[in-house]
Length: 375
Image 1 (cartoon, rainbow, N blue to C red):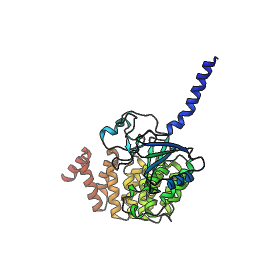
Image 2 (image 1 turned 180 degrees about the horizontal axis):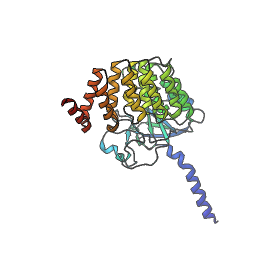
Image 3 (image 1 turned 45 degrees about the vertical axis):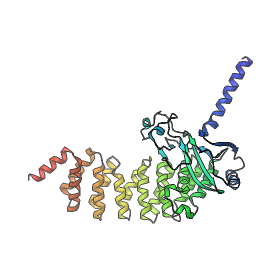
Image 4 (image 1 turned 90 degrees about the vertical axis):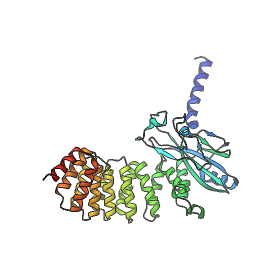
């Protein structure tokens, strides 16, 4: 091999090695950029930035993100939404306009322009610093273009995922400041920190979320955590949700658990929803479990719903179960609604079944009504 060829191969190898590190950093425009390593520790580096920065500035880093189509960016108009990168943006960090969003594998990726066969690999965590404190946290995927509004922007490299989780967790569990208490929950740094933790591809995220779900944590935090356990954390998340379903003392939290189970991709999640629909001590929880079961097609879901109509002691739960039947695919739900309307001993339940049959616009429902009226 000639010297020129060897240099070409070496250059290609160096470029291939450098690409992952470059790919982690999003495209940042309108910023006074600097890069510095966090090899001495993320918390130490960020505290140094906080103590030195009185004027507004942004800092951030990237860590590996869980697998899936988790594109997180923002938009404020149709023109910005279909960005050339295949995602959305640019995201103006200093603007309150725009919507932070995440899409999963069920989303219509084609509506965003370029269709990517695989989702982003890195999560970008950003922190706005002012008056020597963090006043805003944002989480994006690496494919989102960011506009820093002309502010200083420090990009940190060599960040360890476990250190990132620990830093973000300190915001999740911190008491609300007076300023934060006047904002809506989705504007608070704690909510964005929780989202960022849930998307970390690291076991430290599982441990942190499990801690947030403990009964000694505030009810609101347990409820928000439940969603991410179902939406993002796979088998480990399901195990924690099952524990919450059995042990959490709050009916409100267990209601949130039913929804979290409904968004889980783990097959065993349906089994736990069925158990909650049958035997949870809270009637509202049973009703909520039935509602989400109604969004699931299949014999197991239909069987659990009809069992609740027959056996649950609360009429309100029975009514929720009838509604759940109406949410099943028509070939599953309409025959079951007709059976309930024809045979159930509770007149309130029969009336509810007939109401939802009337909303179905199904010819089988019309035939049933004709049969009843022409007797």
